Length: 119
Image (tube, rainbow, N blue to C red; front, side, top):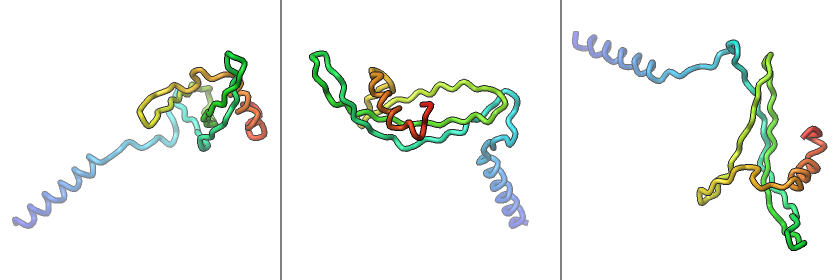
């Protein structure tokens, strides 16, 4: 009788542990007003751009960028405004795009015009 009780207690413990480890599963069919974006991204790339200075000189600046491709397969439009920040090894956080000149973005567009003509 003691063995049966011990076996039953172990079985209940395993079942309870299994219920505690349960996690939500994604819906196969999204509910109304829900959408999912497919996200593809490449490796971060570095470019060097010569930036004009106030004293009519030029200084080389290094910039990192990444290209994201988002595909909305839902029946309705979804607004998406990505925000990226750069964190250095000293935990200094710089918001992406801050103090970036149009010259830098123009060079990125030029480098990727074959792959991404509408960048």
